[in-house]
Image (cartoon, rainbow, N blue to C red; front, side, top):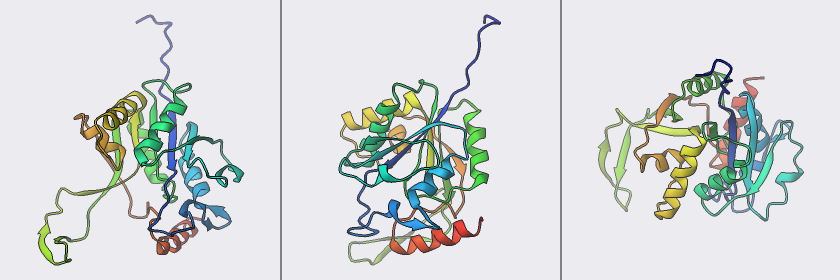
Length: 235
């Protein structure tokens, strides 16, 4: 190697898919625009990611969303139009980043309604990105007893939880690896509900970063109150 050659460390970019309707939360109100302590859930989510040295953040929104761009974010964000499925929105975000990101840069895909990312996880994510490995997700071991039920909600059996993990976000993947995996999933008509699933179809190893139970995703209306308590406890 030429001693004058400068090694450029990979940059970190964030993609937040926020084009979904969130019907389990409400038939009309979008969960990412609910307020906690004077800020929208989406603002808290963006701020939690900016505990990392992000080069930029792209939020994929519905093309009819008129509210997101009126938010006065305290950090720099850009917008693109998302798609019908999460994977479509994430890929749209990657297309938007194409003019900025390098193949070996890391993309952190984070749920729009997951505002409680803890600083302890930030340290773990930074350590992973310094390792040069391709992909990882934040996840927590399954704690509760799991039951498999039939269509009538009658228990069929208990599931061994010893090797089971509950996926969270961020999911951290090198730009080119994630781009190719999502394009492959779409070309093969494979519906994936998170980024790791797209990588699994290509047999790409995905590491687990031990998460925290307070890194909750707001899915139901009652989750909003829990998120308020978690964030208030950190003030």
